[in-house]
Length: 511
Length: 109
Image (cartoon, rainbow over all chains, first blue to last red; front, side):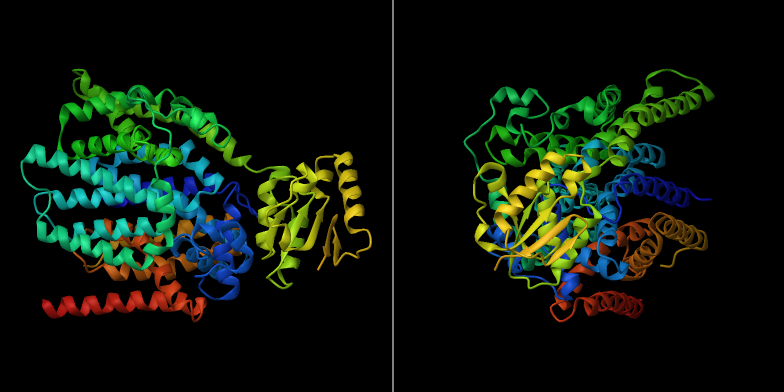
């Protein structure tokens, strides 16, 4: 069997493993934090109405209307894929999550493909194997920053296409493919385009210095640039507001000493990102650090064109995660760090495999040493990274953190009532679930701040329905909370008859 | 420009493995999704680029990455009439474009 066929089998098996692992949280009930319901409902509504969406339906406007003047706030491709998957899957929840799953694990394939082409199958397999357990990647997937996860999977592909073009034969198709893949990145999430572009710029400068010639022909470069503009232009207005917002300067500027620390200060993100996210050992395992350093050293000493490409990519990543020195993109810096595993893991694999070259081993000893190192790598990766990944993914969104069947059924029942209404959700104990209930019901979700803090929700005027939910309180055995909800229900809705009364959930119409 | 026999066998075996995984893990929904994904995304996208000067493995991998973008783009455009119609139209447009490219290349040869 040829190497290319073996490569295909290897990546298929690794990708299948990733699909299994990352697919562990998927069941009939949706999951995800913060914007998950927003990402879900865009595709869900398109599929339900059998129409593409440009202007947001009424029930999404109060929450997301300001993002892009009442229009969808991302280019439509990612969410249209959700709608397509829902249509072909014939069910509401699982097919959408299968699209999210396939797209979120694409990095495993792109890293394998590119490293296989540049360095061969062994480093590619090791790097992509480690990608399967990349904590930063699966955390972002669990948090539901789904379009971003997909967009960053294209970074290695874009860089590879550009690199192929700069090689001696300069096949123009690779430069055009660079443009095509940059545009596709933009369709999914604009931030990822910045990462690819920065890597291309840094590599071009390195290429110019090393080879003393331009990396591309001006005419071909211009055609590729215009191709990129033509592809992006129809979709540019979808996310221009968010691009401006992301790149805007804030009052904070990191001190120059920040250049000597890899990660930004956790103080900037306290409260909404876990501290572990800014820890190398928690994200990658401290055992990878010596191999990473060795890999950098190996690349720097050898300096073949593919080595320079990886080093340029690494340096461009360094520049991007130090943007806080300029005061730009400070609030989005943690998202820039999402690119880390894509570049670190290939270098770690190369560092590991370079180790036998440091010693003068003769004959088969070198081969034995290489395989011993691979076994060591697998043992460490499984023991630290895989075990942690399995633990986190298999236990994601347990208990009341995820919508239960009663809540889902009630929300689906509400969907058939007129759309231009709002539903005030009381009793549901997890904030993200309230958005899920409202959006699954195609109603403006109104949080019951009033019962919690006395403050009125900004969307309170949209209240047409009350959704009184006892299921969470009962699930955690808090009879006192259930009694408090009952008291509140009595005081607010005493003379009303519920339209829906099933499985400890009641829905009232209030006008 | 055609894949050789060994690669074809491996490709179909890999696709069968994926179909098996999705069916076992997610039941009939999983099977419908993976079958639809292959028919609507992968095959039409591969047809679109199979006559380019890219290498064989690049065509296989790129068809996946191109498919997930070009299929929803066309579906979205046609979707203002009907999204479901758009899904079918997008696959047909890619297959048609692939056929035209093939004809043009033959003519040039």
